[in-house]
Length: 141
Image (cartoon, rainbow, N blue to C red; front, side):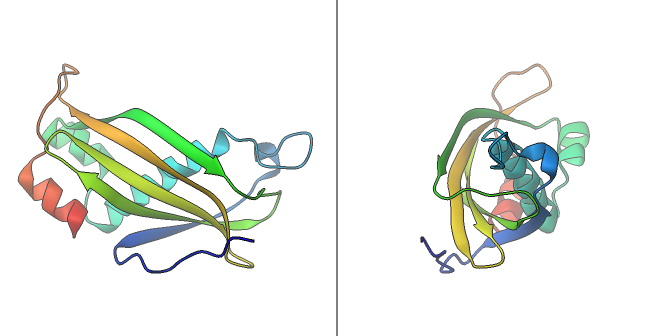
């Protein structure tokens, strides 16, 4: 089994419990749910750094659109497993950023999946824009 490395210095952890509705006929978490969990982790990562998605959109007119998403499934998650979504900031550029994710089974620290999402910054007209410097500093914090 793949054990999770804890050498990341700046990440957030979000704990979730697998719901029955998230599993397929074989009792395994349906693959699309991992991307929902990535979003939960991403929102919490930002919130822990003082950034609210709602405020970012409504007050700063910054929208983070997903331009790429990837997930590598390693070991299955099943109904009622407690999982940890560990989210960290990958690359941060003027007009884009990447989040990295590890999904870990809490009971035994086994890595279930790993992934990343790439986001581009858009304004309210869906045109590319630069991330305000104070937001970039908070995300890196």
